[in-house]
Amino acid sequence: MKRYVSQGEDSYTNMLKIINTLGGKNLNYNWLITEIETNTGDYFYDNYIILSNDELLNKLETKQIQWIWGVFSAIPKKYSKEEILNYNLPDTENIDKVVIKPQHPFADIEIIAYDSTFVQIISKDDEIADAFHNLYPKSKTFLKEEK
Image: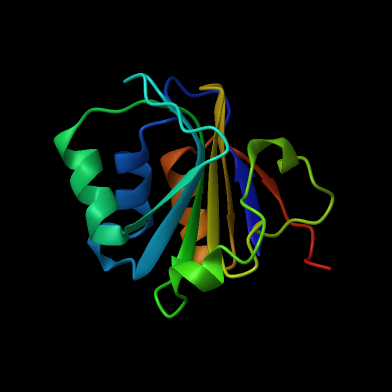
């Protein structure tokens, strides 16, 4: 499991670019998105949306959105909405946790857009984390093991 935090780049919150770098249409997840604030004026604090990978990509492709805040949790499609919502919703306040693992227990990937200043990724798949690092080569890595 790896964690990278982007730094020293011009733009961090182009989620279409990030999702496409991680696998785009080949990702087989539903996305739990929480703590949403965007440049389009969409605010969904204390709320969430769950989108299929295709739905998320379609929204990102049809509307230019800068994500100011948001937690994107990639959850395998085998879990129902009810199962997903049995757990606390991920938030941006936990990004400095000592244990490096996604906040939601079902998530394989967690991407946090943090106040438009940086993006963090935690991935159980090192290849996906490394793809993020290739997109943001100045990103710092954290390699602490899950406890």
